Length: 226
Image 1 (cartoon, rainbow, N blue to C red):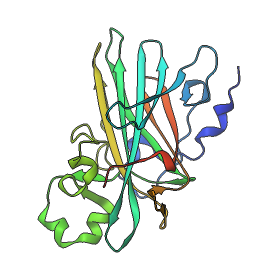
Image 2: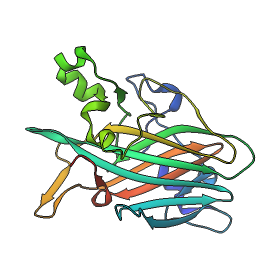
Image 3: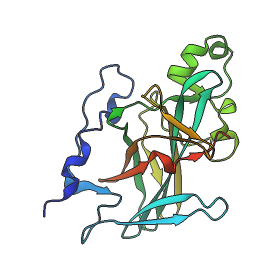
Image 4: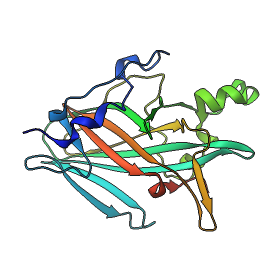
């Protein structure tokens, strides 16, 4: 069977093994190994949406057999007087099987613009003195509200400095996250009701041999920087 998701992967220009290089190669995934949220088919992963009880914010889920992968996205402004935003993704892999599952970062695209995950570090005096480097290449956990508010966990973070593969143990869950700087310069739309990113955010993680692809409208991102 041919799936509509064949066209879904040209926008991913990140290779797990090439994180640290400036020349980012195009990453192409096989359609038969990809589960795309909202593009269900017989024998494939099933898409669903639930509401986070405390906040009422949406959580996207892809369920395949005894494996459930759930996604939440957030954002916060780069800083006062500066254009741009940080986009964040929090993904939980609930492993209901009797075997460990490998979990690796795949790629992210915002309206067709790709971006590498930023390095996330603890407070660093050098970066504090060199704010331009901090904004473009790394962020500090203590200075991001998405972390201090608890929206993002401070462990299991995918970074441009690390190509590690994580493990979701048998019968347990693993939560991973990453942060990017929105590759578009003017990316927030604001009104009396507040601000939200524009466009569409796409990202995927690889769990064992399958790519779990989530497609989010920017307006659904949680403002975890307020």
